[in-house]
Length: 421
Image (cartoon, rainbow, N blue to C red; front, side, top):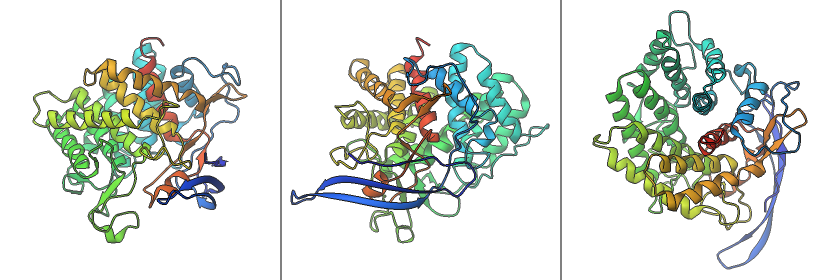
């Protein structure tokens, strides 16, 4: 298996990580050779380790039997001011985390989760309800718009509705190709990540704020367009496509497709599709198409699940390559997606419940309790972007408490523990 050093980046700095990975690769002539790479790389989107004095009462070295409450408490203790958690103050990660925290708060009837969300969002809205968050020039900055929608539902404060509708106005002129939004508004590159970022906002806006017809139609269009280009016959989805393959290094020059099924990228998509199906009217003209996309994807994930650990690999369909490794972030996302489908009656529980249960069980080795009693997530990568090839995906540095993995595990923990918190 690959051996990769763990880097500990701090917020707001141009971090550089040096790491070595060694493994064995068998070529098409059945010749096996050892491959060693030593690379220095600039980490793109760093994550702070938070308040060094934060403490919780969990026992160091003993992983709790349940994760949802201690993991959420660890995030709030580590980042009392959530603006300071990541590489800039307003990111998609806060919105991603708040989705899980809100569900947990509702299950526990505990207002502290709404208050934590509100404390953060108040930094990005003025007294009259004007949106003051990140520029709506890329899909990532739409994601945390979902929190404005949720806060409107939880509090009734009209300022949150006004801000959400201002964000919605940014959707209307946003550029797209063949029905799918560009990841950034300067170039026609369509990332699967961005399907989650924009559509989670549209789903929550439709559900809690208004303009449901526009939001649902736009979300359906993007999800279907992404599947049309990226979903393979086996149900799995590639990372990205472009209409200008000559301008990016990762694209096939004929098809415009990126080369690999990256776990976290497909994971984003696997989260948002059942979230849309949960609220999309069954008589919507696109409902059956999206249901088939979801069920095909679930079938592909079931077939790609690692039989030994129950997790999913960093490059999902290449688990037989010894450089590959189980990715806790993608695994958490897939676990949530499958359990959500079971709960909604979209998947057969007898067939798929063991898949979700084994996926969730596989996450526990990636959790440790540090000397301050906070939960740490280990073994995950942070801020991954489209890569040119398999080796580039599996040699991304792993860091402690990689932001997407922490949030993803919280999503999985809340849904898997919802009946026994």
